[in-house]
Length: 352
Image 1 (cartoon, one colour):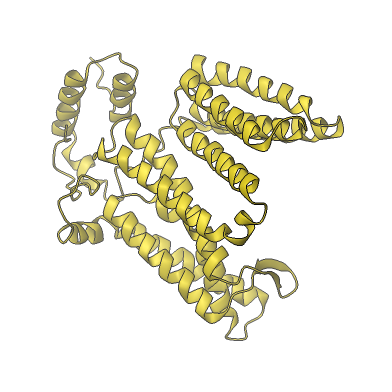
Image 2 (cartoon, rainbow, N blue to C red; image 1 turned 90 degrees about the vertical axis):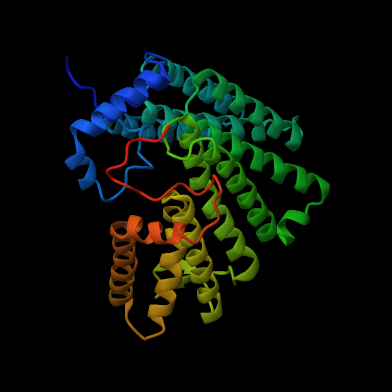
């Protein structure tokens, strides 16, 4: 009998083909058969990209991105409005094919993003609709999309729709409220999304089920919301051009220190909860802050970009290689909460 891989076991369990008890037994047998390969997996056995099966999915995804851009362009030329809603209907049909029939997660992700963008833009273009009503319809549409397609990234898209509803409500209450307190609203929204992600993580400490996938996408959304809110409230957010070429934020030295300190805190939190996604989605601001500090040495554009990439890339590689050793030491001093997964042990059997 052919031995299934761990990924095949996970997918079979998630699809209901095999019961959980049998899946646990098969994983235990797999661990016994492959101890050396298990021990060799030093760089991570979590945050698996289960939404990406093969390069074929990437190939189709590229086509869907180009198709969505083309449809958006021609729809705008036709006058927008109801035409965007027709485009949203087309995105839904493609999601039915790629999501429900083929279970191709990455192409479905592209169609889901297209559906959200088209329906939100279309409803905004219908002048007879109140902004809050349009936002409520968008939230309901994304909830229905998740109910129908049942793929984890839809949770994050529902969160995006809820943010749209929040912004529409605040704008309706006071046109200047959101503009004057944008940073605070973004930080609060990011912390709320992060809290929901932790609730999902608590249900699956070992990253084996759909709960973990839901949390992954929410973490990916939460970090840039928090950092962007911080930049909008505590940092000078005026746009400038680096060497009159590269658009960047107009930092002061204290601003750059604030951003890097916040990113350091997020990195520690990411280590504690074992989520790299929380860190990756904040790298743009890390690069902007490092570039500002490097620029102060009087370097030219090429030197600044090169040194920034070296520092940022080197830090990511170092953290990636040392992730488990550093995290294992950090876990020793953390409280015994379910949001903190246990230390990584390559030779240990899978936890239930």
